[in-house]
Structures are given as C-alpha cells and as structure tokens.
Length: 63
Image 1 (tube, rainbow, N blue to C red):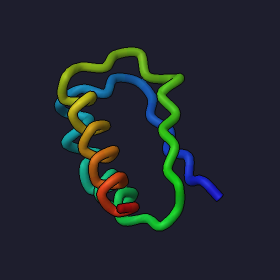
Image 2: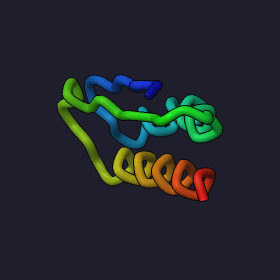
Image 3: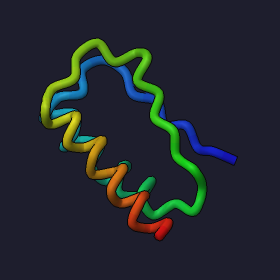
Image 4: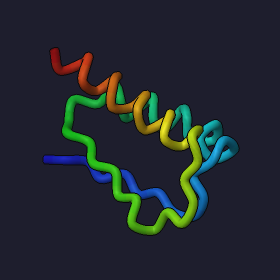
C-alpha cells in the first residue's frame, strides 16, 4: 500500500527546510511514497530540490 504525502501552500526554501525531517523519514519507509502537490500554489528550486532528494533516496533504497 502506498503512503501519500500531502503538501499545500508554498513549497519554498523555508518549507523545504521545515519538512526535511519528514521527507527523510519517508525516504526510510518500506512502502511506496506518493507526493500530492495538487494544493501547492508556489514551488521554488528549494522545493524541487527536496523532491529530488526524496526521489533519489527512495530510488537508492529500492536498488
């Protein structure tokens, strides 16, 4: 079963820093992780970087 992680509002440098611990915990999960960004109204390069970080950690964990 997949775990869906919901983000909303701005996902910028401040939010990415605030969510870092949660994203790291997700990256250690054995379940599939899905990000729901449908309520995100602003995404900057730090937010994209946090998503890429999570993707790389999850991809590495599966290999």
